[in-house]
Image (cartoon, rainbow, N blue to C red; front, side, top):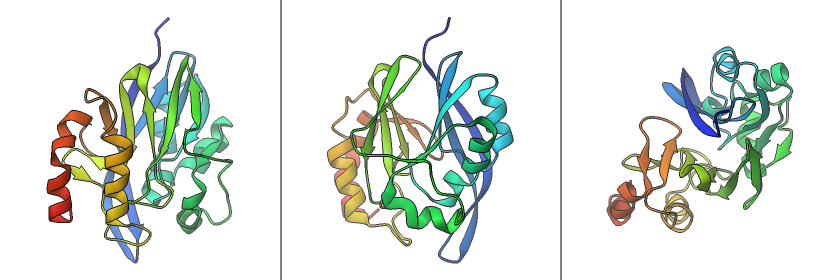
Length: 210
């Protein structure tokens, strides 16, 4: 029997906010074993995500934040699998822009533990990119799922509604760069990185107003 592991799926669609729409590729992360999994960010394509989950039990659909490209497939995936959709309540205004008639099933809270396949992921509230943005730290896997808070090469964007650059810098500095340097950062878009690779650049990002 295989133990808990990280699986990766890329889905494509659009991101819309503040009157603009952009084509995007999103990382969908599936964490678990041969029997049960969670999905982190049900983006764009419920069919593809359900196929990747297969006949395993989906215990939760965890939203790192409520920008539409990270949650657009969540209700359909929940309807197909019976899994609850989990979101930090500070992101409800964003959620309602995409799903006005379907609320999340439960709230994420800072420090909450999500158990799956014999491991635990700790919810870290990391506002800045969005008010209710969270990351998920899985020490047993040496992994951090950072959503759009931290990418390879810098923090997530803060130029649109509900975002704030000083806040995302504080979140990254205090909540993420304090994790072990070898922690692998699985991002919401693009390539994976590590805490050690990003930590030396914090002051540079601040100077640039990245």
